[in-house]
Length: 291
Ligand SMILES: Cc1ncc(COP(=O)(O)O)c(C=O)c1O
Image (cartoon, rainbow, N blue to C red):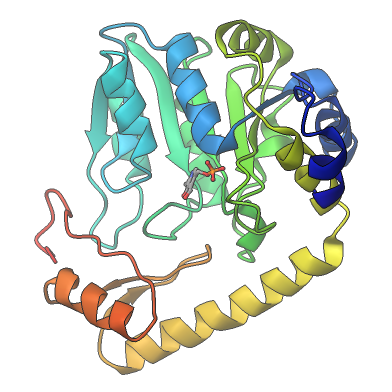
């Protein structure tokens, strides 16, 4: 990354991130044409919306999930169909299936989910995937994929070849620690990638991000260490919070979701003073467990 900025800062970046796309293709045994790379997964989500959502289109998502989906649907004058969580803050897969109509343009699945950290299991994934019609996009946000160690987690890419409407999104921001440079991608069938490329701006991923992502894919040692340290930290937090009497949810990401049973803002501010950054989930819509 340092070399790239020193030598090439005066050149525009490669528009299609060819080195990153080729390396991803090798890693996943797919073609570079199966990768849509943008300015973080956030960029991918925005472009999905700009490319595919027309006014009035319905998009299904969970009540407590990554807010970017609802944001882009709103911006495109689409309609978010928000499915309440189950009592234990998991996705209501059958509720999502029941919500599918001929107007459904996208089903968003965040797995592991932000902010709950929970996953949907292989059998649930298969049920949902089978219920999504061919002309509806099934978008799986797997930003935290690399942190998962639950054997019941579905390997979505195993279903890729048989499902032209399946889009899997991943990022270099999380396990690879490159959040500031902004690079993420979608794995999709080439017809989808092509139409997204027509919609986007020409240079969404800067040179430093491309160099960093390219190098990061070889840095197995860093990823392995991050995985191990995170798994231990996640367990420690889970058990510690449980011992303190809080309602904690077994998650698979690089954070833990807990119901403290009291307003979260004072806890957020108190922990911040101690140098601990955390995220208050104040708005648990439709939940009796507010706070
Ligand atoms: C579920 C989920 N998807 C996407 C993103 C965005 O990732 P990126 O940094 O690649 O834009 C995040 C970031 O927090 C996230 O939690």
